[in-house]
Length: 402
Ligand SMILES: Nc1ccn([C@H]2C[C@H](O)[C@@H](COP(=O)(O)OP(=O)(O)OP(=O)(O)O)O2)c(=O)n1
Image (cartoon, rainbow, N blue to C red; front, side, top):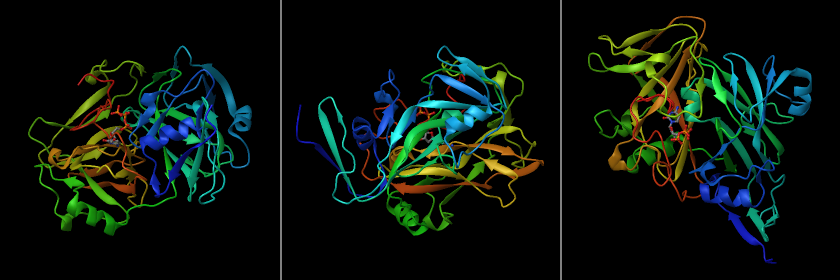
């Protein structure tokens, strides 16, 4: 057994990259339930995929357990439990709470140049030296959003979804609400992912413009870089929706209702026409969204996330709450490739609430918030790892035959 602890320095603020996530997992800051060791392919360029645990609790409604644990709340709210080790079907518009296999042991204080955490595994102990708080942010995976499955993480004594405060020690629970289709889930399925933040810093609009000038973030459909003067920034970089195409070209999809369930184990399996109605390009490039229906579109711009940055797509607030865009928001470093690859379209998941809503080609739909990585990730999206959506045009989730 080695007596000298391995020293791990977290020096720069930002999202922790894959190599640091691996170290934090070895050091016990990210843990998993007994019998379910963390698997290497859970690690993404700047996030870790989280896995569903053994049970789903059907609850009447969603909640935030500000004054108690999620377990206490479940004791009061759970209607019944479903074991999911062999798989189980979750019904549309029902709320389920599923304990995840991963847990967090975030250090509760910062103490520059002092040991934050010391744990040993297989004879190695780690000393993590950091000057910033470690917190975490969760988000649905892209595939989950493309299937219209609503998910968010809940933690004990928390008044916020998806955000996990510095010092949090405990379990993570996932609220899951399939919206359009029933889904079959099983222990170990990965519906969402987690990023760890060392301190918090976000690129200002000035930083975004400066970055784009030397390391382009957005490209036009013809592959040209969007001129910096044409970038729309205001607390993030705005993207717009594409409804334009040649005659007969599909520019979007609308989810059909009352379909058979989708087994999340079945990749490239389901017929698109069974589950989706295609939306064809119209001569005048507009569309009226039917209230409460779910649509998938692509962004007009092609985007690219340089390797030193991580990005998150945030819904564009129309000021009226009628239009809800996107559920899944993390963009990995490397998404959209190198400059010569000219980026890839982002997928926009859209629902209009209450009223029919007109959308037009090129309408602003969402914005991207950029955060620096604490270090450049050793692995980036589309390189070395199995990535499903690199170079994508309009693309449904990986369960459909395309
Ligand atoms: N609304 C969104 C959200 C994400 N993405 C892109 C950017 C991400 O880097 C990529 C993959 O996202 P996830 O890791 O969430 O997706 P999956 O695990 O489902 O796909 P993969 O198997 O490719 O990792 O999809 C997108 O085009 N549109």
